Every structure is written in structure tokens, then in C-alpha cells.
Image (cartoon, rainbow, N blue to C red; front, side, top):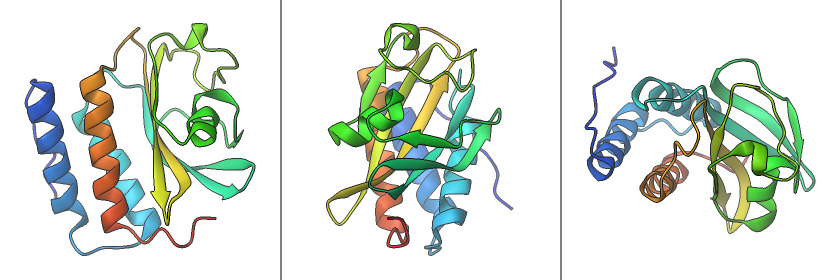
Length: 166
């Protein structure tokens, strides 16, 4: 049985502890769905002020498809280059949005979301998916959060078989 811990309020310590918890949770498991599902649940239960935490997987050159997540039901398909998730794929870079209503082309899967952080997941030099985090608070995510979740995604990439994603 896995116990969801209380993590530090200090951003650097929080992200280091979260990565350590993810490594412990994943162990030797390499399955894509299992690891993404557990990662989404861990993030959801440990990260304050979220209303959605999950993954979109690249299933073709032009489209992301909903993967494991925690939160309200979500948009199933997002075109590469559209919305925050699709923009992160097209740019091959994380996208931190302080106010989603000011982001051109934002896709409002949950009308309660006010800020968003999207981090690309890579395999063999190619973006194969994204970690998507939404908050009901404006400017919820900091540069420290972006760097921390980028490091978390690198941990996930190292522990997960991503060959099955397009």
C-alpha cells in the first residue's frame, strides 16, 4: 500500500520530495498507462491548488489524445499547435500560462481553470505527450514549479517505456 505523503511547502524541497515519491511509486514498473496513472494520482494528491492533473499522448503527427488524469472529464483530442497543450508540442517546450483567458486559442475543457502549466514528454528526441496541470487560481505556477515538473517528467521518461506512443 502506498501512503500519500505531506510534502514541504518550500518549492525546491517540494519538487525534490515529489520526484523521490514518484521514483518510489514507480519502482521497476515500465508500463506506460500504469506509470502515467500513478503519476497523475500522486501529483493530484500532493500538489496544492490544482483542478486537473494528467497527460495527453501524441497519437499522430497532428493530434494529442487524452491519457490518464485526475479531475473533471476532459477534452479527448487536441490538435498539435492548438491550445496550451498543442502549443507545447509544437514549440517542443514547456508553456506556463498565468491567465488562460489571455492565452490565444486556449481550449477551455474546464471553465474553472485560470492558469496552466504544460510540460512536454520526450522519447528518442521527439515529443510524445505532455503533462498538463490546471489550477483555478491565477498565476498558480511559478518558474520553480516549471523547473520542478520538468525534472519530474525527466524522471517519468527514464522509468517508463514510451515506445508505444506515436
